[in-house]
Image (cartoon, rainbow, N blue to C red; front, side):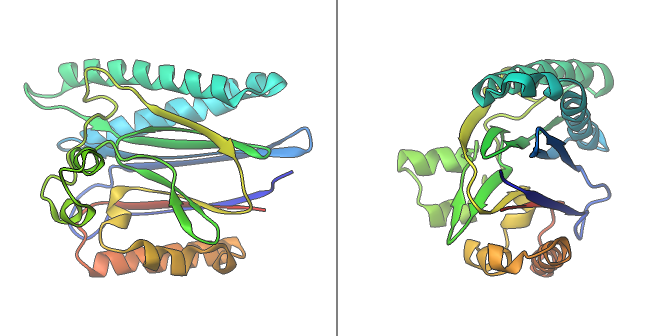
Length: 257
């Protein structure tokens, strides 16, 4: 059976008045094993609208963990859970769209990315909308999610190089997000959990540091306990801020062993 330790760190950054990122960790035991849910939502919208959108989605998944997951664990099927998460996100998209029409001025919108992972024993399921990410960290770093952005689409089509995408002014242009898209089609992934670490992060965390820098601080050897996990995450957050990243910055670390 896999055992998990998880930490979350979030920072308002150097320029914004509110932190529109929302983070969730839920950790419980069942039948001698462990189950862990981690989510990052990066909200967007004027005033505190992005904060409202991301918090709305976080609350829905916290409630799902408390009220629905116990029934799912009676006969676990992570593909079924992934399908239910996809439907939840589509319903939340409609709910937030309606709230935007009610509370925002004409032409304004609020929305949020969503990246969530559920570990049950030695398996996981991920649902993903937008450009927050999940990485698997073992002897190397592997991005599990696919960015749903204009530049990521162009790179996949071969019309833009990765180097051009990193510098392009449209790098934050999302193809879809929960609450600001007419329709959302979440990416749903399932897989086998491996010994090592997993990381969820908002785009503010990764724009000003390289994957090599992330790996040097966050490889499993350097994440021996929660104190080390927090310390290394905060070191990278300070690095990002020193390089003038203007967005909110959030990271969740999970050690699996």
